[in-house]
Image 1 (tube, rainbow, N blue to C red):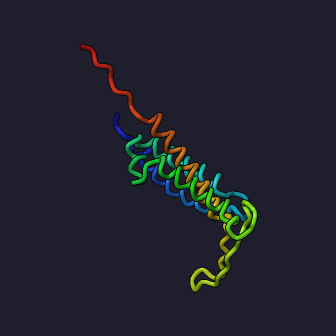
Image 2: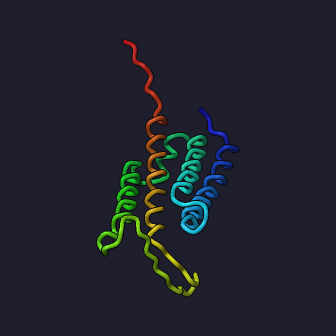
Image 3: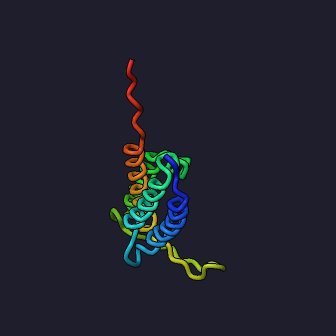
Amino acid sequence: MSRSPIMDTTAQLVFHSALVLSLYLLFAGHNQPGGGFVGGLVAAAAVAVHYVAGGIDDVRSLSRLRPWTILGGGLVLASLAAISPLVGGGSVMESGALEADLPVLGHVKVTSTLLFDTGVYAVVVGLMLMVFEAVGEEAEPERRP
């Protein structure tokens, strides 16, 4: 099957724009609407556009990590962010914050919610990559003797 140059160009434009939007939703999500789940869904939609344009091989070329590694890493990160306050005597999912004045960025506030959202983001993206792995394989032609 031949590739469409129009679809390839459109997919490249949409893919990168959607990834930037997904990262914005991830970072702005703990203070505004958005977060790891919504950002992950937007990133998964970007990967879906990439899949439509180029197939499973193009999707596999997006990351050196396997989908289950991304999903597992996100699950570990979200779990650690959720239970880490127990070490300091806090409760599960208690949020902490760190504020700093950085030279280029100005005043920056980072909360532990961002770590949890990043884990959720990775779980959603990893799960969608696993779905593409499952349904994206081309069936081998039947062999007749």
